[in-house]
Amino acid sequence: MHACRKQRVTRRRFLQWAGFVVSSGYAVPKVLAQDAFGQALLKGAGSTFVLPLVQQWLKLYRGASVGAEFYSGNTGLESDLLGRAALDYEAIGSLGGLLRLQAKAVDFALSELPLSSQDLARYGLIQIPVVSGGIAIVTHVPGLNGALRLDGVTVAAIYRGRIVRWNDAAIAVLNPGIGLPDEAIQPIHRIEGSGSTYTLTRYLATQDAEWRNSVGVDAVVRWPVGSAVRGSSGVTQALVSTPGSIGYLDRVQAEASGLQLAQLKNRDGYFVTPSAKSVEAATQAVPWQAGQDTQPSFIDAPGEASYPIVATVLALLNGQARSSGDRRARAFLAWALANGQNSARDLGYVALPASLARQVREQLLMPSNSPQ
Image (cartoon, rainbow, N blue to C red; front, side, top):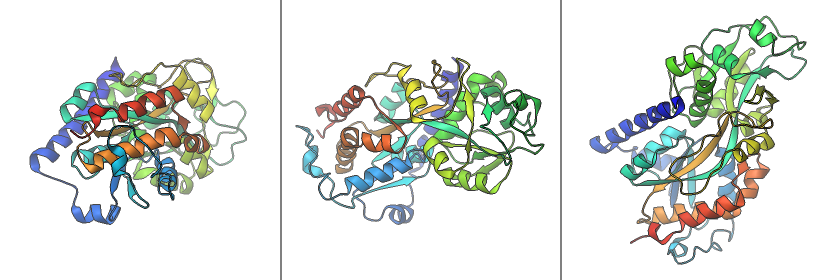
């Protein structure tokens, strides 16, 4: 109940800003858009969480004939396919992607911020799942002789400034015998609207009532303590350069950083490392079908193998495919659902189940979503 109430806070923030965009006539400056995208025929923006996968998809889709061979039935999409070097994606955070889509600066957005069916109808959008992945708690604590174990209550206490040193008794009781240093904890968090922030704060709200009441759940929150940085790359750089630090990254980029990924205690009491297997266990524990009004939460999912902080990346598009950009966005995403799932697995993301990917692809290519 609390998580749902706070979820509306996130939507209100987007809707308030989107309303400003519409009412004031504000749009992303053309010079900035041109610098970012050049002469791309299809423009996307949003989540940094999924950037490594999008980069791989773009590489494949820009290939000699992979796009041209895509067939989309009787939707009319096949007449407007992308050619080579025709798509660009700007990783500016989930909230930034939503705002660019509302400002008509991009053709689709990728986000971990679910919108309600009422909000989607109001703004003429549809949202579909693309891929899932874990949010890792990443630390830089020199001298540990074992994997660090944490639970949600302890992580919340660190980010509320209630636990300030690594050898605090609350951490020590979870980590017997690993040599915790008497060193200050340096929390790091995102400054911009981030789906990773939304996912983490949604998890912390399930673990700590005071967090839920005093900090809340949103893409941007008023952090009680810590250093603010921009983007996943900023978090990585700050963690690498700051001994004693703790932060959060998507699992794929966290593993690439070479830093320590904490094991988190899940609902069933097991300490679980973020991995494709543990994320998949969480997604399989919650039923989901294409087209349902409410996006399910994989936060703190049941099961001894389930990792507790799991995000689903959603693609948001205009509800009616009237423009060439709308049609290209559908063609690209339908291609990704049919041909890009192996790439997702190879990079450590969790692909949609084959039956769900097929349902979502059919939803994208429905005649009702085609130009009228």
